[in-house]
Length: 176
Image (cartoon, rainbow, N blue to C red; front, side, top):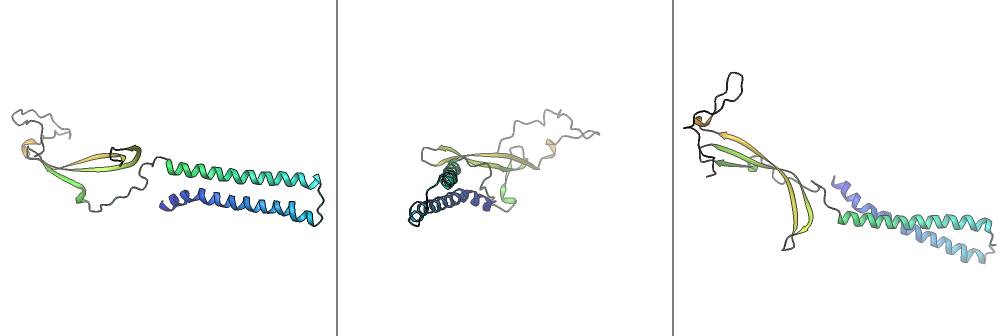
């Protein structure tokens, strides 16, 4: 993927360079026809001049068109918004390091992991000049341990029953 990105970055520059070399070569051929061949006795005739002018005009036009398109593509590549996940690499490899473990006020233990689904740089900057990024994330919560008094019994169909014992109900859990 990095190779493709590098090739796409340099392709417009290479095309422009090849076109400029072709334009220079065509101008050298034109100087040979208009200067040297006349000194060797070339006789002007519309029979050869008209196709020569047409072909050289088309070649020059195409050469300059490729140069202009290459410049526009290069400007687009430089100024475009970075697509999601472009250049994003996962730096951590240990599974346990990405989970944060919390013991709640009711005695429960949970693990939370933030999964980054994508990130991109915006065309905005903070007051200190640093670029602003947006990150698309998903929270994964894994219940590790729950006190028995907080668990609900499942009925015979496997569905959860409503928690009816109000003495066991506690206020919303806070992180401790």
